[in-house]
Length: 317
Ligand SMILES: Cc1ncc(COP(=O)(O)O)c(C=O)c1O
Image 1: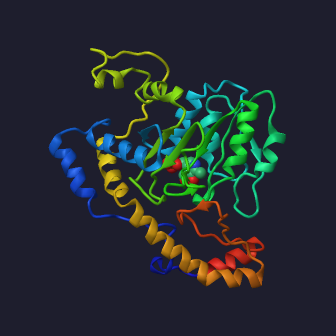
Image 2: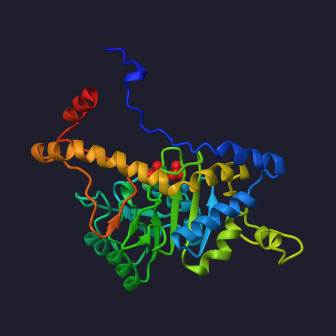
Image 3: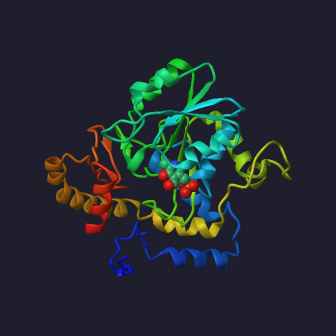
């Protein structure tokens, strides 16, 4: 077996570092405010609310946590069905499965690898509670059709926008269209805090409950706003609030969101320039960005004819 020099391997991902992360973390240390919910958490949330035009944003410690919060907010009961694409990351399904929900997988479109909106209606049953589109590679699902189906069948929509910060559909930020949206700031994402995420709440009926769920089932947020003089247990919840250290790191990245996206678009365009004609002559599938979508260059992919070709190609490059 050939020994591979790690220097020769193209890394799976390489996180962008702005240079301000350490100074913001130092600020947290100076302020001696390490737990979550402090100044940097607020700054990140306000930044995202205004940038994405979302009613309420709550930082979480991962997108998985944001999806779990969504499952609690939807009050998923054993046997409730959630329609989602057959091609996604495990957390999309797991967050609902741990509450007894049943993922109903719908096939994906060949051109975007997103849920095929034409197949959704066939998957609806009396147990269907929600539709969960995943914006794969930061390219939007066909949201007008999905929202129309949801409205006609009285279903809720949770967007898994883990990969989709800075992407939009007809000018609307991904994650801001359904009732709820979930973002990831994992190291592999365009904007990162190592681990991290956020739940985007567009349906204001969910705001107060979401604050309670994130704060271990207590009304601590009302206490922090001075609305009550002590806080107590008021319902189900868990610990989904990231620390101020994470929020400080994240804020340094959020400030450079546009610059980071532009850099990635340049790199994505270089890959596209290099591979587009090869894709056409060899009949390979390459990313397709529908006209109504602005993407964030999260992933550039090539789909080869079979795994043998794929493995030879990976070895070659
Ligand atoms: C589509 C999708 N959903 C959810 C997640 C989970 O994100 P996190 O690692 O922040 O929990 C990911 C992470 O890769 C993802 O790609």
